[in-house]
Image (cartoon, rainbow, N blue to C red; front, side, top):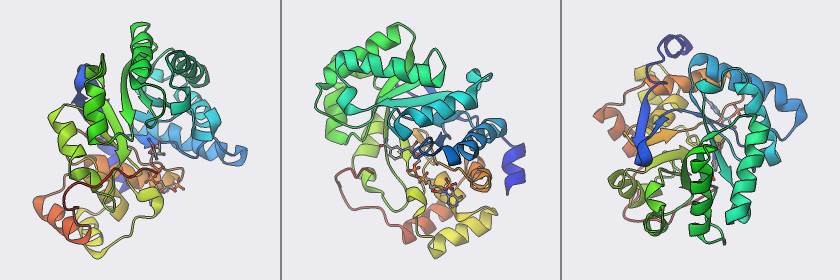
Length: 289
Ligand SMILES: NC(=O)c1ccc[n+]([C@@H]2O[C@H](COP(=O)([O-])OP(=O)(O)OC[C@H]3O[C@@H](n4cnc5c(N)ncnc54)[C@H](OP(=O)(O)O)[C@@H]3O)[C@@H](O)[C@H]2O)c1
């Protein structure tokens, strides 16, 4: 399993395209809960370094994770090879005023020890007017400190309203909870984003390690010679505007997950997964973790 993904990086280099000319790797690695404990730091850094060595080209982080500790580890991981990584980070809503967003981004850049963030997101909707946050994103973009910007945990109506604000037209991504067990966005948000050229970044693609491994999932995994987790991850990147960011500190998990990037699920595979994890009927409010 690991051998194939380590020799074939075609899938890992696949890019998805979205608004504002953004081209973003379809497979990345998440960092929530990294940087929280000094005893785990070496393992977390090893995982991020190995992911880059194996060809993973996107790292998702946030000022919130480990209160900046995760960004600090990402900074160590990309040292000397910054150009290999598309870095995504996020501003917390309570910092997302016009000035606060700029200060938060500059603090993130310092921890990341880089001069730019590739994609900068508002972590979830907050009380500062979105227009102010977007104006700050524009200022950061004009100065080259961020390349693109987007949102996270925004449902379909909120996305439509956001795209309607000044500069909202450049919102390139919405990062949301999406996995086999939580398919609520398929009702409205997913088709809306596809139609409006907004990339959807699926977070918690393994439901934080709690995804139930049902028989159909195991069968599909057996057919492809990969783990059920790799199939679950591949499913979250099965459409051209979907991108996925599983987190793995264990190197075995990382190697197994990377296989997802090179998988192509057939109509039969998708039907088997639908039978185990049915799509929702109609609109469901966006869940968030
Ligand atoms: N925007 C937001 O509000 C938001 C919310 C949640 C997450 N996120 C982002 O999305 C990323 C991914 O989501 P997540 O970390 O919540 O959950 P996840 O990626 O669904 O699951 C991570 C958990 O699954 C385990 N795991 C990974 N690969 C495995 C495998 N092959 N077999 C068995 N277990 C495996 C990991 O263990 P080990 O670490 O021990 O390997 C970890 O405990 C986050 O890290 C973060 O960057 C964003």
